[in-house]
Amino acid sequence: MGLLYPGALIFFAIVPALVLAYLARERPVRVTVSSVLAFRALRGLRKERFGGLPRFNWMFLVELILLSMAVLAMAGPYIVRKSYPIAVVIDNSAAMQAKLDSGATRFEDAIGKISRRIAATDANGQITVFATAPTPHRIAAPFDSNTEALIAIRAMKPTDAPNDGNSVASLLGSLLSEGRFSKVIFVGSQAVADPVPPGLDTILVDDAIANLALGSFELRREMFGEEALHARIAVANFSSQPKQIEVVVEGDGRRLGDAHETLAAGESGSLEFRALTPASVYRATLMPDDAFPLDNVAYATGGSVKKVSILFITPMPADAAGLDSIPGVSVRTVAPGSFAPEDLRNADLAVFEYSAPKELPGVNSLIVMPPPGDPVFDFQTTPATAIQIAGWRSTDQLTDSVNFRMLNFGQGEFLGVHPWMAAVVSGQGGGLLLRGERQGHRFIATGFNPFPYLGRRNLPMSVLTLNILSYLAGLGASSGGYHTGQPWLVPAGVETVMLPSGRKVKATPGTLFTEVSAQGIYELSGPDVPATPRPVNLDDFAVSDFQSTPMLKVETHRAFASREGLTEKAPLSAMVLAAILAIGALEAMVVYRRRRKPLEA
Image 1 (cartoon, one colour):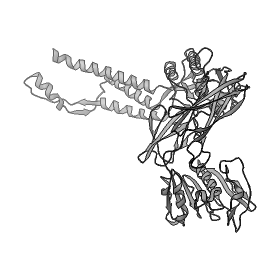
Image 2 (tube, helix red, strand yellow):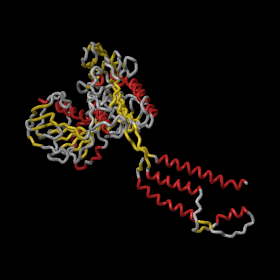
Image 3 (cartoon, one colour):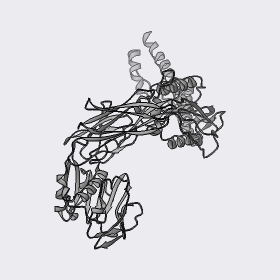
Image 4 (cartoon, helix red, strand yellow):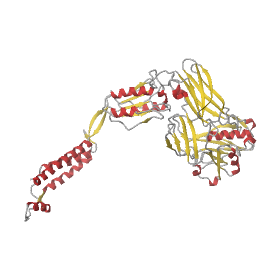
């Protein structure tokens, strides 16, 4: 036993004040009264003096005890005892939705096993429960009883988001290294690789399930002006036998087509739908159904309904005029001298022509022929009167369908090696198109000017311009690029997102939207934005492959605490305060009863 704040014992110095209070003696005063009642009424006018022997009674002893206990409570008494705090890490990722041979899902089996383990565990210690998906997190404050922990665990639900194996292994290693737990229990579908760290108990819920899976669902237009869409759907056979699969595609609830394929054991491939009727929302369904229904469905959308808002910062406003001819695009021009970062608030992307921002923009941006040595990007430029293309990445979204041999850049500048932007298109004197990411935003810099946009009058350059805008804003890009568990930026003007469950969530443009743990269609809307569907898919063959689940490599940074329990200081101040209240209430009751007796007589 000890004291957390021994310095508080100095307040015992106020005990003599209680003794002084009892040294005050009543002075005798002669009072003539006509009755006892009048005497009782006048006794409050008594006068006191100090002197003589103190008249201690039982009330003095009670008050002395109460005062001493109050000082003791301030000092923070505690006792040292053994405790057995436990950390429980539960895998609630998408893979836990797979069904076992028993008919129950992995997650249901995991909850049953960990519930039985906790029910049989010594309750002398707190239980802290963690979930692994979409990112590892604690579900609530530590529970003081097994019953509270069991209620919270049984209320958990699996998500459609996959696990990040490195993050889960890091969480387990951190819990083992902190020294706050006598044991860490992990229940999930991934085994822990040897050597298993001491103090880690694993409950493996696994089964080598034969599974057929849908992957990415991509839509694109084959050529300008064509309404029909081309779809490409990835498929895989994660089983030990060849399988024939069928994929049916629906658009806005109407069946649009189907395709068949036979896949060998462990083979992956793709199915093509070359002319899908335009629709707002597309749904692909894999048949036959199997034990993991989550990857038997995939969603896509025909394109964004809302216009992409472009802020064009330029000294030559005429260069931005041609962008208005692109369907679904709105453009606002600002002179470089009038531009302020607040102008980007309602923009999906920014174009800086012949200029560069003074601070890193908060939206995806294109920098056209930037000046040398700007303080933000620090481009190294070399002027060129005639630009010749020397090479480009042939398999890249930015160069897709671009005929570089027909491009004529004219004059411009070569961009030197950049610390965080890589060259996609290069000339003999350096880079001509650089791409990089910073602080969650995409940036492209060009040593040539792709504007004004001339459409079919300069088709090679127009295709390259559309690829750049597609990369920065999603215009004309694949509609299947959003995945469960991966946040995305809220577009300009969007203030509300309706989840697949139907629940509406407030959103702020330009910030990350993180509630993407469910597969399905998310509906984005705002005061000036019509309801816009956005597909979010699992699209992760690593999750769908139950034949070869990767193992977790858990490393600890220091020796784990003894399994015999941890010593902790159990404060007693609350108990002391409760005793003070009880004694005080008892004293008040006794005094009240004694004062009432003469009146009753």
